View 1 (cartoon, rainbow, N blue to C red):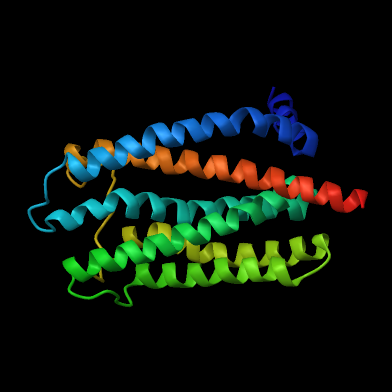
View 2 (cartoon, rainbow, N blue to C red):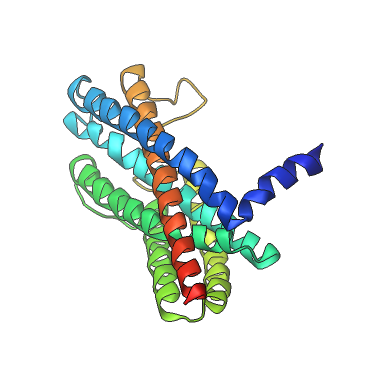
Length: 242
């Protein structure tokens, strides 16, 4: 049973089958992104009240939290895809990791910018070398380095090998960005915005539009990933044919 499920999954490592699947899923992901992001942001920004401490600044969370969520998890997805390339030598996985990098970089920059704006109002400073902020700064450097390596190294196989190893090394900082807030109480950064503990969770008036925004941003990532990976596969096909 497990082998059958795995075989069904791995068959989409075939570029032709992957592109067929992407052609079906990408329009749906794009539609979900539109239907979730726009209502989520409109609801969150215009139909929620100010926080008693952070006032209107709190509404930055509707961009900051989804961007941070993707910045971390896109890199972790790239790490998994890199491991698949190193173990199974499947071009779809290597090109999916490559296609994700620019999306993750943009989300990381958005996280840092929105976090700085939030911090300037809440903490009175745009930046501190807080453990979580520092790990995000290092994560940004790994995104930039990963993209530069892809551009600088030829041929594709060598670039995929080097960038995969580099990506795996950077995954330490992605994990730190994700989990350090649970273990280190020092620093200005607040605890988790979303939690299974109701006492630590944000108020419902913010919670539901934030969930919509998270769904929308995640769907947008899926759409962009499929489109960009398909483009990379087409470029590779043309290169091999030429």
